[in-house]
Amino acid sequence: MPTDLADGACRADNVCLAGSTFTHSSLEGAKFHDVNLRGAEFVDVALTGARLSNLCLGDVTIADANYAGMRIEGILVTELLRVYRRQSAAPDAEPPGTA
Image (tube, rainbow, N blue to C red; front, side, top):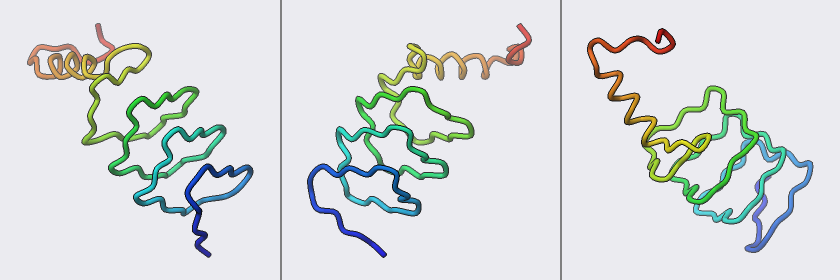
């Protein structure tokens, strides 16, 4: 049964919110610790300034995203993509892992 939440901070400990939908909602400043988001879908979501650590990103797909300023292990993603695309476009480029 759907539950309407009032505006303001909420705390959810040891609950199952599987199948929940959040639309036109703000979770700005929210903290997620030991949370299962397997199979979750994020569309038109602002993660500007978010910090992600100790993650399992297996089989994650990111598409149609703004990567400006995004870093993975301290490396700008835009730079990683630029280098990858340049090497992939080179007709004599060696396949990854063969150099």
